[in-house]
Length: 123
Image (cartoon, rainbow, N blue to C red; front, side, top):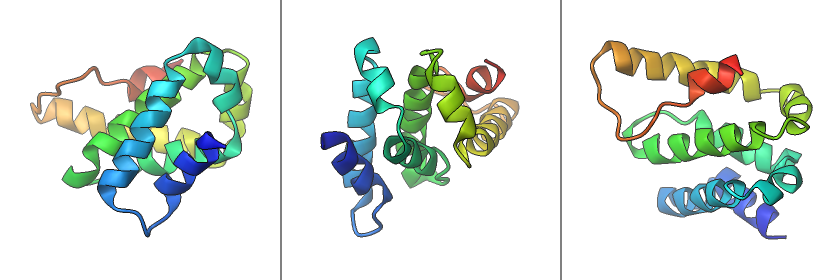
């Protein structure tokens, strides 16, 4: 389905960064709808979100931020949390992004969006 295709784009190294950003933003926007969250909490989507969230560097910033927002939205569904907690890399990536965001705050880097990783990690 569409979720698998979007996830594949995020994970496949043959796609351009712009394509990956469009795919992860689509996943993020789909996760905004509460009725989508349960169906989206599956391995392929979580793999895409985790992989994109862990990307570092200026060209990956938008992708990483969109992925964190998607993860945060999926985590608002209580029944998703057990599935997400069992994902092999999700908690490590959220911790890594939390550390990166804290370094930005400490360095005085202003963000145009709310930093969500720490809230997600502590929830």
